[in-house]
Image (cartoon, rainbow, N blue to C red; front, side, top):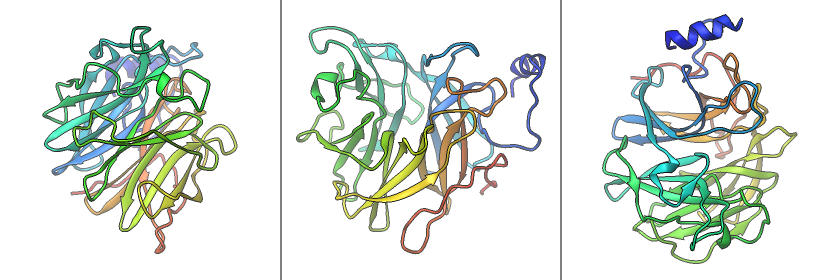
Length: 318
């Protein structure tokens, strides 16, 4: 932890848990983890909470990148993208995910759209691109990929958030996103064009934050759910990326000191990991969140075992 922040926290009467790895990032407040494995390195793309202790809404100015090769020591690349990268954007830097495809890195982000000829505002999804996993990133198409006017099944203006992108074994690319309903659409191989109509599905208890991946022959749709309120993590499985989705249950209960949580699941060096956020750092909370990671385990039938949230975190890997 940086000395200046540690002094500030201790001056506020805070104490740090002993020998705790979780949260894994302790010098700034981070949320919405999106892991990506490239070659021998795990990269972690995050949002960034900067609201004060007294504020009662999000303040999220940019997205950040971290990396590790042992799951314990994290390299900080700092702020690598912000809504200012997109000429059409305004407002906060909500959840995002970076994926590798055809030799480039595509960072799908959710933010808000200015009122202009392309949109009258509301949440929107953009795409940034880079030749390297840590950037520099630039707007891939000069306009939003998804705007509020394209999705009419929900009336609120912040429904087009939390993109997750999945590249199937046949290289078909899928984009999933949404608040209060889950939308999905095929993308063209360019990663910057829709390849068909937008579809709407309603997984049980779905709120937001979808994360889609495949393990063996089973497809997983993991998401933040209404559960008992605040959010929990629940999931569905399917025989294909387009469904039909079968509800499988709750895998993560409420997290400490935050009414939201957000899943990011990845395999790395022979183990499966579950990334999420909570509000457990000193002075943390629902608008000052922190990313954690714990191991994820499967049953023989492919179902996910309940996540055990720990302060110790995960063991180092070689």
